[in-house]
Length: 465
Image 1: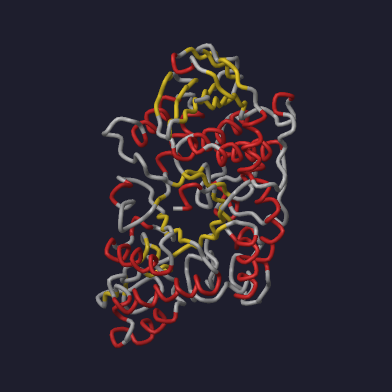
Image 2 (image 1 turned 90 degrees about the vertical axis):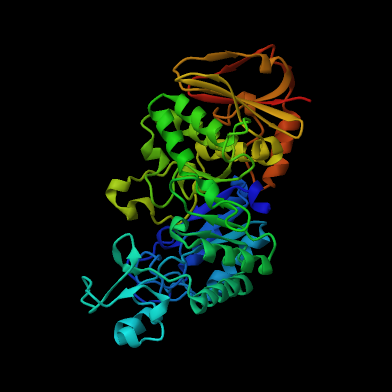
């Protein structure tokens, strides 16, 4: 599936495009802001854009009012079609947010329920209970998402509702060419509905991924044949920033081996889970890390460990944002993309990842572990990559039998202006082509059993066959 080889870029359009927090009903083509980002996305090397909620809603977008009409704060369907066409023309696939667990109180079938109560023909689209009330004084209460009555829960076992939602997905495919879905709060979705959704989307395209938002538990229960193709790897998210901040890389090495290691008991071998350092619900990685010197290191870990990496808009140039300051602080208006030294480093990492299948499909194996250092190996189809990580303030020299080889070596966290990396500053050339050029230009050296990693750095050795 194309998703397995992707680098995803998340955009929260209501935030990035500067929409008001409350829907004023004024049609404004803010979604076209994305058009100006496309050269940046090409230069960065991403292959798919995931749009958080796009469709008509009163506030944050997850309180859907109309699944088939772009939110007026972002423009019209023609504006969205223009953006999707431009992304596709640039070779970038498009993922939409499938918000199917709940809707907003202004969703017309729910308005009908509020007005007609037990006589509403849409009563069974929801979970109403006529023995109480809500804070809105509806005269009845209903199941909702995690206690939020502004988000009534949908009864996904209702055949009429299921068909309605599937036809909305068909509309997205036919109108905008959507290539796959990220499913909001997939951990709450009915498994039978997920199975039906998977079967339906296969009629649209056999290569139409479903990626679920899952926070905890055994991802294998939902990421499996006939249900989801991938899910958010929150375990990896937590273990990455926590291991860096606490200078305890054992936390990360244990988690990665538990999930993707070579032993038969490792639980997610062969699965391509979505990895991220931040998103629209959590603090920005530039804020989360207690030592800013480790920001390039965090991205280098994301790009060299198993999974499908997702970058949240603006984090590639170090936008800050704390969850404690409220959701708007995580979703700032951004009229134009910026290109900083961090961005250039990440673009180089992406280029290498896209050129080296071992970084996309390889397994995981710990070689040397410590609180402030880690050496691990990836292997795939006869190819090997060895990665050294150093959180200390001095150089770290790794010694291991796996380093008794010849390899092309890359300093992933160095400033791209460094002489060792000269000539590889990103442009809009295909990132895979750029990465191949970087690999071809790098000399083959004998490691002699050691690998030296600079302070707060990550070194990548692509082993010669």
